[in-house]
Amino acid sequence: MKGWAMAADIIDGKAFAAEMRGRIAEHVSRLKADHGIVPGLAVVLVGEDPASEVYVRSKGRQTVEVGMNSFEHKLPADVPEAELFQLVDRLNDDPEVHGILVQFPVPGHLREDTIVARISPAKDVDGLHVVNAGLLATGGDAMVSCTPLGCLMLLRDRLGSLSGMNAVVVGRSNLVGKPMAQLLLRDSCTVTIAHSRTREIEALCRQADIVVAAVGRPEMVTAEWIKPGATVIDVGINRIDAPERGAGKVRLVGDVDFASASEKAGAITPVPGGVGPMTIACLLANTVTACCRQNGLEAPEGLTA
Ligand code: NDP
Image 1 (cartoon, rainbow, N blue to C red):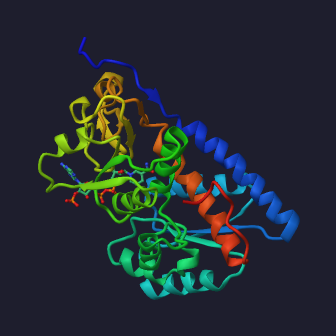
Image 2 (cartoon, helix red, strand yellow; image 1 turned 90 degrees about the vertical axis):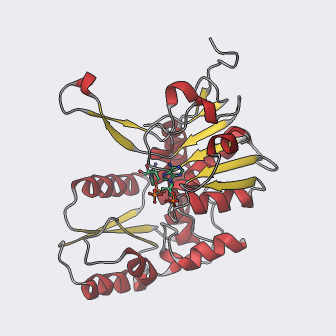
């Protein structure tokens, strides 16, 4: 047994997300009772990617379960850009729609950045619009990307104040790494962003009180990267072959080698059941926040960054 061997607390994202959905449902029923408003989320799916269809169904079901309106729009894979934009424009103008999400990836003839730019920043519940990225960076009331928002909520729940902590975010995507780093900075962490060109990445992570891995490389972050007692958030979702489960079977693993890292970390999110469930819960939370802001009401405490 190594000197540092201990069992980390498992951060139960599934349970936290369920509790959050309960709080969201309460806010939604108060909005209805006090103001006659029902938050609405519109999801646009282009084409027939099976994984995207599963996500969209799941988002629609959970939206309805918390008492909100769900509007699903399916467009053919070869839809011209102008037609997609017409739909987005209609949703931007529709007062019953408070959040708009276009499910990515989209077919190759469409560009994700121009689609995001077309969505009204106030309805951009994915937090991808440059206006929201700018608001997040400058301390404004941004719509924040759902996955990093979910990570932040798990971290606050586990650690309370994050002030003064050393945090390393591995990955610098616009969807996860960069907004995650901004959120941690806003909570007064000292933040380092690591990426594929970072030198001495293991040593860097070993100094961190918080490690967030958002890389897309199965089990890259091992115990050797972790300071004893650190909090580890694993964003990665990777499918790897699992011949032990039968021919052609796969299993889900994160970007963190859970078996070794969980013996050294103080707390760690599992995959599945960690960050994943928080992403949709935060999409619902963002829709309530967007609805409140569009109606001149305070965004509910505990559901925003
Ligand atoms: P991207 O591919 O957009 O970004 C990956 C980042 O990891 C890049 O910044 C890249 O660096 C960095 N990287 C790649 N290889 C290395 C390496 N060897 N060492 C250090 N850094 C490296 O991915 P996303 O941010 O979109 O997603 C990351 C992971 O999170 C994926 O597994 C994805 O499936 C998962 N995910 C999970 C979600 C959830 O709901 N739980 C939601 C969104 C994503 P560089 O910029 O230099 O290329």
